[in-house]
Amino acid sequence: MTDANPAAPMRAQGLAAFMREKSALRLESLIVLALLVAVMSYASPYFLTLANIFNIVLATSTIGILAIGATFVIGSAGIDLSVGSIMAFAGVVGAMVAAHLGLPWWLAVPACLAAGAFAGWINGLIVAYGGVPAFVVTLGMMGVARGVALLITDGQAVYGLPEALIWLGQGRPFGIPVPAIGFIVTAIILHFVLTHTRFGRHTLVIGDNEHGAMAMGVPVRSLRIKIYALSGLTAGLAGLFTMARVNAGDPTAGMNFELAAITASIIGGTHLFGGRATILGTVIGALIMGVLQNGLNLLAIPSFWQQISIGIVLVAAVWLDQLAKRGVE
Amino acid sequence: MATLQLREVKKHFGPVNVLRGVTFDLHPGECVALVGDNGAGKSTLMKIVTGVYSATSGSVILDGEDISGTPPGAIRELGIEMIYQNLELAGQQDVTANIFLGREPTRTIFGLATNIIDFKTARDQAEDMIRQLGARLPSVDIQVGKLSGGQQQSVAIARALTFSPKVVIMDEPTAALAVREIEHVLDLIKELKSRNIAVILISHRLTDVFEVADRIVALRQGTVIADERTGETTMQDVVAHIVGAH
Image (tube, rainbow over all chains, first blue to last red):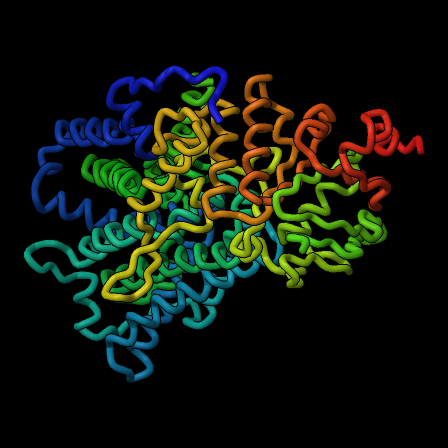
């Protein structure tokens, strides 16, 4: 069937249009990152030192890993507000396994991942079958996971981690912090999953048109469960690295990290209402957050300003996106 | 033998009886037009056939086999496709992804099946299908949301026809189209019939119905009130069935 009025051939208008065409990755986020780096290196002579760059990547790794999970969730038109709490929960579970139960240290790794994935799976189950909005379910889990973390530790951080476990947080093979390696490997694997597997593509399709996906036979419910479980799994991984880095299972870890993770994903180009997302964009978004935080630290600006700046960046990014869309229409 | 048989299909949502026992047959190469006023139960009936809803009672039989209660993906595997009025495309995904939605070809690695999509096969087949349909698209890599209405419908049609269906259901395929595009859709229905595919056409446009349908089944308040051969009825009669003047 031919179209009566064939649309004029699409013209790519420069690099930004090309990138928009090929992926959700926004050139704007790269420019913002470059500008931030330029400003910070002008403001502080320490900013562009190798040691500081590693600090940035290390500081970015936790938010970055959480943001990669958030990218799947937001890409499917969902939201996960519980990742900061799940991270703390998974961290204390792993720490207790390693420090208190007399088990081999490495069991802390699957314990963290399993604890995170389990909490995420519960989220997914209730979202998919309970008909409760993801916003409410994960807000509830934000309270529950944090509460359980505090309850099982009696509100005290769990110390006494084995050396081998601490290496996962503090080790620097070839000078590169282990959590930074974990962040990069996670990004590469989940980039492949998002772009090349049926699971990844269906994640974006249900964010785009859930009803259509269902009518075409995509198992939407089981897919949602997997997506939230994946978000929990990445939160568990972030919890593992954080626990190992600070040498304790801290039930108050990851406070407000969901805000930073969602922000990183959104400024990286993930469409807030689902359907489009890239892991590379999210990594850039997380680096923007990391550079911002690091720069504010170097300039000795009180850390309260970090919260304020993250909040402003989140709202500004979505606002600009909406303005750009209105401009197109 | 009939390709598709509906037997006493009933559906109620709580106290509301939407379908009160619908029975009709559909034969290979035949086009049945399903007509009726809004709320007559056409959409609900088709959602039962495609597995989106399950019937309260009654059965849907494909090639002699009862397929009632089969989920949508498995129904498509069995050869029943539906082109929805709103097309049900994923606007931010490309043409290939939409055509293969839910049935992406996957790669095997060392003889093991994987979840990894074989993009090359999908893309080649998508281009082939678009070419066969004679649709003019800038590229199969373009986001579907950037295409015109007619082009988007081509994508939805390509998706329905790629896997050699036995039954194709079209819900108001001509409602949003320009005159020339309507002709293409009607030609396509004739082509499907010549290839022995059975078609259910839901349409309010009786001129289209009389041009391509072999039989007209009229629904009113969830029951079949007329099942007539197109050559043995008139437009006035059909309108009368729909509005309930008989």
